[in-house]
Amino acid sequence: MPMPNYLKIVIDNTFNKTTYYDNNHSKGPIQSNAVISINKGNMEARAEHQRTKQYQTIYTFATSIGVGLVILILFWILYFRNGFAWQSNPSLEFNWHPFLMTLGMLFLYSQGILAYRTGRRFEKKPLKLAHAVLNFSAFVLSVIGLKAAFDSHNLSSKPIPNLYTLHSWIGLATVIIFATQFLIGFTSFLYPGLSQSLRKAVLPVHVSFGTGCFTLAVVAVVTGLLEKAVFAIEDYSARSSEGVLVNIAGLAAALYGLLVLYLLNEPDYKRTASGDDQIVLDRSE
Ligand code: HEM
Image 1 (cartoon, rainbow, N blue to C red):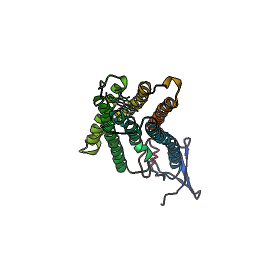
Image 2: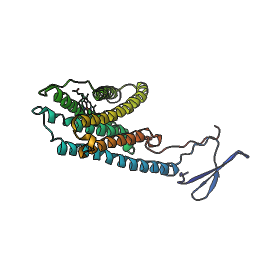
Image 3: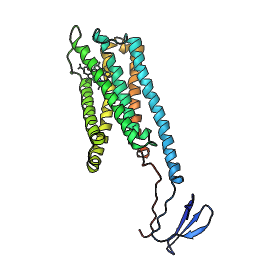
Image 4: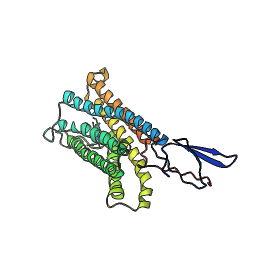
């Protein structure tokens, strides 16, 4: 019998009888233990469509804040901080640090951890690859960004001590956790890959540490901006335009972080298995 597109099920407990009506309104009894597959093109699909639309709206808003933040940092460095250089000018080499750390550890990292939700309609394999590539790019940019910060201390005509600030401790912890996560994630889920049962055990830990590490990255960006403003902006207390710009960048980073964490933790936006779902109705249960 061809499966109807529309199915209405009436369960009458008094007479222990179940009746279904298909879209032609023809009526028929359901056998005990009958398994009915209902095409997902109905209610569940509509709810899924609604969730996807909601996710996309918040994701687009969050991503525009993220892109705006990276552009703001770039503008700050070019307009107020004399641009970029490498080891020939350590103080300008430092400027790579905020730019690359924000682009890598905040923006690319967040896009990487959201990949499964953003690409919920795709197969799992390309999503896994996108997740790994985005995270790896975040890591590479962070290593260059850290080198710029250390060089700016070590190569300065009056060398500055390393790792004495709270920001540098939080920042270093973030990068160490991130690198460990990447290594464990890569070997567990990509290559060579663990057994199914071990993957199942590792996954919740991977997700928790990934989310926690992203939170630390947001804290590192905010404390880094605050620190630089206090160290370098002479008229910060007079609410100079540079100071206001840096404050806005810090607020944008915090807001971006909150939105990403919301998208990441909302169970409704979790990727569901693709393909037709089967609803199994069994009256004997
Ligand atoms: C997730 C992002 C970030 C991480 C992981 C991070 C990490 C670090 C680390 C490990 C250091 C120590 C370098 C040394 O001691 O030689 C450092 C230095 C520094 N960072 Fe960041 N950073 C981040 C973002 C930022 C941002 C956005 C700024 C904004 C300007 C910033 C400003 C600074 C400053 C001023 C220093 C030099 C003073 C110090 O050692 O604290 N950082 N950062």
